[in-house]
Length: 167
Image (cartoon, rainbow, N blue to C red; front, side):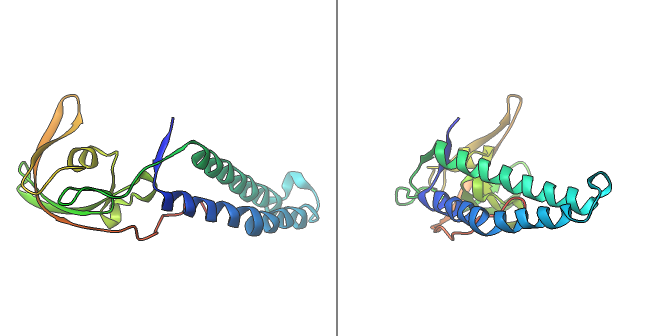
């Protein structure tokens, strides 16, 4: 499986990986050593918590390494007047009689609370590459879909913000 990421996504992952390897990992290893010195490991909560945190960090490092290694670099540019990555799109949902505005982003940057939706989501797939005035069907699953009309496209840019997973 390949992950479609922009060059900026990959750079942010590399920065996080570097931080986790050079700053966080040595600290977590020291925490494990300190907790181990507290005595009986079978009843030592501090030791278990320190090991858990170290293992989570190691797991996140492996995840980031794999994402970077398998990434397919995609462009964040789109044709003039069409919906592309980082653009804010306003569309009318006919079924609900409401207008929705969201930003199309890569999976790494999705955040529903900030109206950032993935290009792989049903809405993202439906509107990507479309123009103002286009009526498109958002196919949620095999038996349900709904129509939206694209009302406005506000060109966006890569803000460099990516939610960090874990601690």
